[in-house]
Image (cartoon, rainbow, N blue to C red):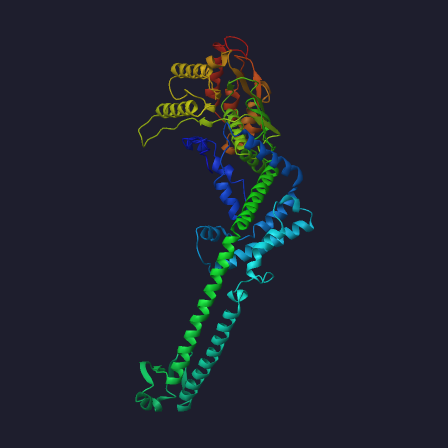
Length: 572
C-alpha cells in the first residue's frame, strides 16, 4: 500500500501510526487483483490529493460505469482467464533497455501471454463482453506475427527458420547420423571381444565381472582403452576414439555451433521486431493491468455491498457506513448478527465530538468514517450505501497510547508525542482530517480535560480547512456550543429493562467472549446527533453485563445516587 500521495515534499497521506491503528493492511487484502500486473498496480496505488479532483472524478466515473455494466458472473469469468496470464514485465523491461536478443524461454513467455490474451478476447467477443476492453484481437495478432507459428502453443527457434537456418539444421542432422554410426561401430568392436564388454553412450567401456574376467589381461594391453577403476562386479575403461570417430565428432560439433549461431541470429531478429512492436506490447499490458484493477474494484464493491463514492464540496457525508472486518466478524461469530451501520453528515461543522460509554462503539464509529474517506481518496468502493466528501491532504488517527518501555515514555508521554505529530502534519499538509480517540485520558482528569479544551479551541481557530473528530468522556468538551455533538445510541434498553440480576448471575461462569456477545446484542452502535451536554448513564449496566462483582456495583450506584444533580441526559 502506497501512502505517500503526491505531495511535492513526499509527505505521506497516511502515517504509519494511522495505518496500524486502522488495521489498514488487513483491509487492503480485500482488494485482490489476479495478475502480476494488477498486483504491481495495487502496490503503487496512490491516493488523490487536493488539486487532483478532475482525475479522481474520471476514475470514479469509470468505477460507476463498471458497477452498472459488469455483473459478478462477468467479473468472475474475466478474472478466471486473466489469472492465467504469465508475467512478461521483465522481458519487456529488458527489451526497452535495449537488449539485442531474447532467449527461447523469454520468447515462449511473450507468445504464451499473447495467445492467452487472444483467447480471452475471442471469448469476450463471443459473450458480447468485448466492449469492456480498449484493445482487440487484431492488436494481439500484430504482436504474434513475428512468431510465425501463431497457432502453436509452444515456441522453438525452428519456427523462425529461414534458408540459412534450415541448411545448418540439415548439415547438423547429417553429422549427427554419421557420429551415431561411428559410435555404433566402436560399440560393436568392443562387443566382439567379449559379450560382457559393452560401450556406454558416454563413451565409457564397462566389463562385467566375473563373466569377463578372462579378457582382462587382453584389455589391459590395448591402446584404445585406459583403465579407470575396478570393483568386484565391473572394470571401467575410458575409450580412446579412433581417427574416424574423432573426425565425425569434430564435424558434428562444428555444425552444432553453426546451428546455434544461426538460432541466435534469428532470436536477435525477433528481438528487433519485438522492440519495434514494443509500444503495442506495452499497450496490451496496460490494458490487462487496467482491466484487472477495474474488476478487482467491482469484486470489492460486491463483497462489501458498498457504493461508488462521490466527490463533493462539503466534508464527510456517510449513509449506512460499516466496518468490513467487524461486520464479517459479527456475521461469522455472532450467529449472523448484523453490524449496525453508521450515518454521519458533517453539515458544515468542522469539529465533531462523539460521546458514549466505553464499549459503546465510538472508536469503531471514527474508524468507519476515516476508512470511508481513505478508500474514497484511493478511488475505491466505500463500504456504505452512499458517501461523498471533499479531498483532504492527510488523514491522521491518534489512538489511545500504550506505555513505551523501550523509550522510557509513559502513556501520557506517548500521547503527547503522537498529538504533536498529528498537529504538525495537519498544519503542514492541509486540509487535514484528524481523529482523536479519548485525548487526555492518560493524565489526571483535570489537566486531561483542559488539554482537550485547548485542542478543540486550537482546531476551531485554525483556518486551513481541517476537520476534527474526537471521542471523549470529559464533561466540559461535551458542553461546548461551538462544535457539533454526537453520541452513540448505546444500550437498546434502560437499566430497569436489562436482564434481571439473577439472569446475569447465571452468566457468572460464562466465558468473556459470551459476555461480549451479550453486550453486542444489547448495544446500538448508531451515531445520533445530540445537543451540548446530552448523555446517557450506561457504565453501570455495561459493567454488570461484563460481570463486575455486585458489591462494587452497589457502592457505585449508591455514590451516583448521592451525587446526582438532575435527571439523566443533561450535565449540570
